[in-house]
Image (tube, rainbow, N blue to C red; front, side):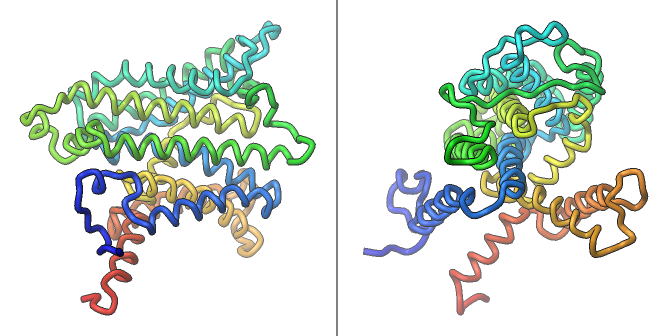
Length: 367
């Protein structure tokens, strides 16, 4: 017998991961689309979508920290760098006299290592979150980006230096080199399936965390931390967990992001990258896993769409040494999107989806 939407008759039903047939069907449709996409699109488009999947993993981590726990962070790029170089060192060539390397290219080793080292650094910084909040915490985390840039450029035995850089971690899964053309599938097809599968795993883990007691503690701290502490929520413990989990996601995303390109330069972990992740979370919808994923895909595909403007608008150059150029336009668009969504739709793309869904559910009694 069909029941009314969102009508739950038990606590177990209310707390289930997919509490309606619509969500189950939508998830199955997205999984089928993700599996079929490499068979339908050319390799350049698959590389862009693989990058979007990795950005989505990083955005989910920042969403847990900023959207769920209410801890503003502008230092996400720093943790991406920590994870990226951890993976690069673990996977690096041990015979290279210039750079550190342990020669373990198995992704099941270097990916958790990248996340755990980044999480450990995040836990070390977490005590600041118990003393600071709001603008002060944002400024402290912003300082991490500049400190990280200095260390990444100067620690040449790990990063290779600002000009040379180093090879990123090599994706090898159960002894099979995913980053090479295979007998049946191209390199980009295999990379996309790997990144898409990891995105599904990370998204499900974050969704389960959000509906656990830890997630409810995050929400209580976000809404009113003093009141949360008064009712027994351990602020130090849960803020530390929030920083640790967010840093773990950022470290894994940093390791995967440069495994796609195969090369990493220390100058790329800068303030622009942190702002890019802030834009993904705000545009998609802070505090929701699906919003973070939508924001990451929207921002990544927006870059491709603006690149096409160079051919339509002659004034906009595609060369970075000319003004105005396409890269300046992208930065302006990111800023305009952040301002626009904060003013008119603070819940982001997820909020727009909620409006459409509520209108459809109440039709024709939309008033």
